[in-house]
Length: 282
Picture 1 (spheres, one colour):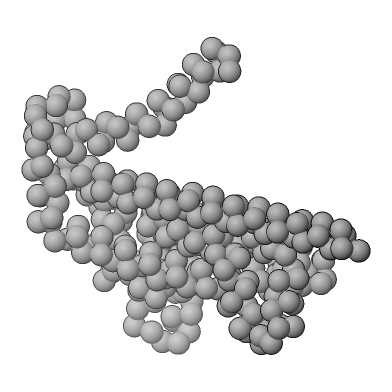
Picture 2 (picture 1 turned 90 degrees about the vertical axis):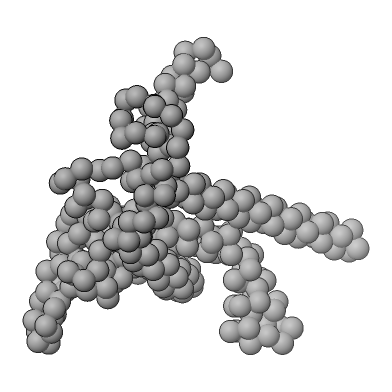
């Protein structure tokens, strides 16, 4: 690696991670200063755990993220299996294109269009309020679903198509073969998709802002409302905790992908050895 490349890489890493390092350091600052570190203290962490409005917003965010990620994972896995089994290549290409639209579409367009749809449907049925937890959940599932599908599809394509057929030949029903053979083979993709859906839901602000009701506030919306007055260092403490949670999830995702790749290599090696033994016997 050339010295210029090393310097360039180092500059990029500093640019990406310097703000996070500053945030981590000043979350332990004794004073409110953003430029002078006056001393190490856990004061802002204590303040955070006494801020009931922020904790309620955090709870809402976690409940929303868990529900959205679980539903997106189940629906996205089923959709990926369905797309893989399609024989019409034009229909498959159309569905792949439609799947990519929520990812490419700007968040503000998605948020406004979903808000208009929910308001229209709410007024159509005479609902007292059109925006609530359910509308936010549907919105989060909408933009999380494509990421789950795109994580599961490659695992289905890498899987040996003869495995579920062999299981059914040995007496398994199609449903049992799906849960006993296919699901374990694509589990790394499912786990990665679920973690990605969780982090995307946890992080979202724009779509949540347009589809939230008065009685339900997520953490990004809570922080945005605080910026109109002042953001205290207890938000740095909260951001630090969230950063380490996401870091742990990222490590789990990478370990899951590594184990999945090793499983695929082992399966290929077994098939190769079996093939060689068959040819030798013949």
